[in-house]
Image (cartoon, rainbow, N blue to C red; front, top):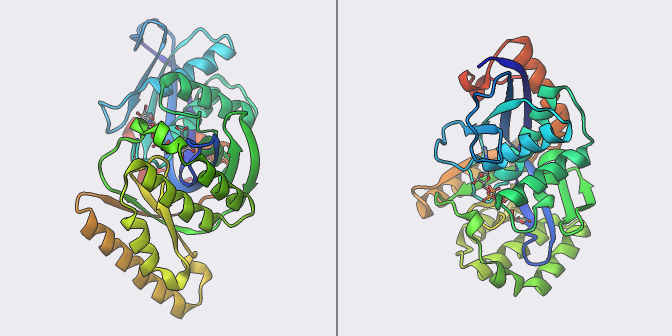
Amino acid sequence: MTTIQKGYGCAFGGGTIINAVASWKGCAYATQLKTYAEVCLTDTKSVKPASSDCFVRGSISGNPDADTRLIELCVQSVLEQFDCSKEALVLTKSEIPIAGGLKSSSAAANASVIAALDAIGEDLSPEEIIKLGVCAAKEAGVTITGAYDDACASFYGGVAATNNKTMELLQRNEFHYDVLILNPGQSFSAETDVSRSVLMKDLVDIAFEIALSGDYKTAMKLNGLIYCGALGFDPEPAVSCMAIGEKFGVAAGLSGTGPSFTALLPVAESLPETQRKELAVVVSKIKENWAAQFPNGKIYETKTCNSNALEESRRFSEFMKTNRLDLKNTEISDLKF
Ligand SMILES: Nc1ncnc2c1ncn2[C@@H]1O[C@H](COP(=O)(O)OP(=O)(O)OP(=O)(O)O)[C@@H](O)[C@H]1O
Ligand SMILES: O=C(O)C1=C[C@@H](O)[C@@H](O)[C@H](O)C1
């Protein structure tokens, strides 16, 4: 089997302002945690189909048991759209924990669609790229509403409010915060209780209007408490974090369908020296507090992201191709482009 063309894409993970499961309307923001994808087109029929209708074989670095159907469907859709009869391998490498509520599926979908386009040398509009990934996510069964909100945040960066039923982007803004993430460990975001969430539709609608008014932090706090109530999560990680970060107006809440929580803090570099030091103490205290609550959990320190995934992907592709690298043998920490 010979690889004849390669393509690269990447996209961002994120956090939730409003989970769309209750009312189809959602709002999400992008973080700097990324998923990278590499697509290799091959010139023989030796790629073993993952299922009878699929001529793309996927793998997820470091996660041999994870479900690869989403990325296979993404690449297959691109090849079909351009009548490309080649077979393909798609590999992802990611900083985003899988199925934790941190938009891992949206990032993987956007990254693999972009990588497939790069491999065949074709373009689609941002909207077409996002919708292709959302359709693949629906087909793969990894989403309830299609998660167009997450997909838009992962692609455009910033904060995006959408109607997931009509796949409309209602609002997109720049979003500048430092972000703390608690991933408690267990991952089951696909197994959420939809009917208990829908019970809260009237409350979530109020939170969504608050988000549209631009008060994203209040919307996020409200959304977090509503969904913790509906889904049986203890809101303590969010409340204790906000108590520690009160002086800095820290907002925190459940992300997606859980189990992760995210917190928005002021951008440290934007503060005067003394406050920056105080903020660093607050960050340490939040991390200690979360670690005590979830000894097996993982804590991530990142920032919101306001870059566009397609532009980021072009830089990534050029870096990989110029340096003749392949994703399998390259550490994420070495992807400096
Ligand atoms: N790096 C990745 N590479 C390939 N597929 C991935 C990757 N990350 C996630 N997925 C796919 O997405 C699925 C998880 O989707 P799920 O919606 O449950 O998680 P999430 O997107 O992290 O959560 P949420 O939508 O609540 O933010 C995985 O089972 C896998 O199929
Ligand atoms: O599966 C879905 O449809 C969704 C899952 C979560 O990420 C939510 O945050 C999102 O709004 C919708």
